[in-house]
Amino acid sequence: MGALLRRLDLRGTPLGALASRLPRPEAESGSAREELRAAVSGIIAEVRSRGDEALVDLGRRFDGVSPPSLRVPASEIAEALASIGGPLKDALGLAYERVMAYHAHRKPALGSAFSGGGVRVSELVIPVERAGLYAPGGRASYPSTVLMCAAPAQVAGVSELALCVPPGPDGRVAEVSLAAAAIAGIEEVYCTGGAQAVAAMAFGTETIRSVDVIVGPGNRYVAEAKSQVAGQVGVPSAYAGPSEVVVVADESAEVSLAAVDVMVQAEHGPDGLAWLVTCSDAVADGVDAEMERLIGLSGRRAELEATLASGGYSVLVDDLEAAITVANLVAPEHLELMTEDPEALVPMVRNAGAVFLGSSTPATLGDYVAGPNHVLPTARTARFASALRVDDFCRHVHVVSSLPGEIGPLLDAVEEIALAEGLDMHGRSASMRRAGLP
Image 1 (cartoon, rainbow, N blue to C red):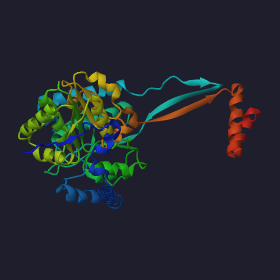
Image 2 (tube, rainbow, N blue to C red; image 1 turned 180 degrees about the vertical axis):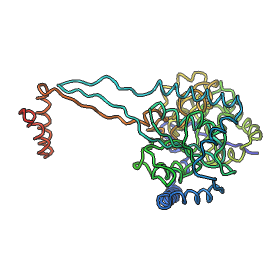
Image 3 (cartoon, rainbow, N blue to C red; image 1 turned 120 degrees about the horizontal axis):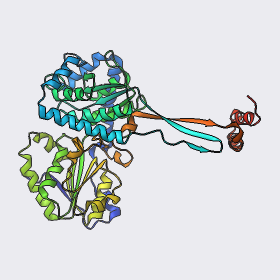
Image 4 (spheres, one colour; image 1 turned 90 degrees about the vertical axis):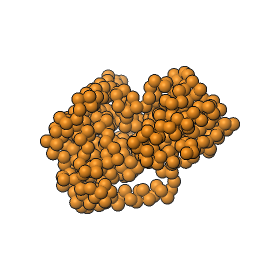
């Protein structure tokens, strides 16, 4: 078997020229993007026009199954929690507690008011009323994503949560995902996935009421659907699509750990990225050899090979500065720094969803129990977007008050600016108050 990662030797390339030498992700190409947009647009239109009937038909078309009912009965959710083993139940409970604790620590608070010139400005932080959560399914079960989406919404104070999960081969939501929903106290669970689930949450159907915000990762169809319904509902700016990792490793790295961590995110399936960036031929060769050994041990070999075939690279660079430059250009969902002094590289990081320091801190820690969210920006949206957080479920409303006897100079400024903009009533609104009129 040949190397699973395509070797890209960028040694000798100036830092400013590295971008031109890196492969362009297929998802960014014009024709593929237009085909995806058209397909998702058609799915959304079907759901808007035919509601539940479309969800059932599209589920049969894409998943090959029809669920007994779109909404999962409360009894089935409770039974799932009772059925899973004690160690798994404890592990999910621990993960939920830690994620809740982290987000509670990061919850936006009403800060001190801004005052000056006779005006006082404070801020209301108001949660949305209803949030739609999406957790992938079908290929695999992701109870951790159920917890990751629910926790920040609950900390924010969202009163209603609606969870959509694609059905498994038996036409039902996986038991472990339902158990996670029970742990998080989610009562509203729907057995539907893909772009059609996003459309249902955005526009509503006979069974699924529309929501105010949609969060959660998914394949490129799910991510594209979220992009298309943004504006109808709130959608965090991150494109939470297929999973990505860049592992930066120097000669101090243990190649077996670097190899397994390159492969971890590729397990999720096609269209993701799995990159090794190193200055060492020995590390690159060692990781190649270890990956060839490990892939034979995986029960998800097909998913691994699909991701690595399209998005697996081993990049050789001159030094760690060049390695971080490459990472910043890729802007990965997960960035692992397996170097002798990872802390020294952190100030150089500009674009990443989450950064994991040292060989003892794998990205899988963040996937499950570290506390921060594992719903992270992909497809280079880490250039401007962040991990899912409490603020994604909140609105910030300014509250302004003034003291009539102290705002004269501010009213003068209002009148001058309004005059310059040709807005007579704006100016009159100020001048009447300055004159003491009601």
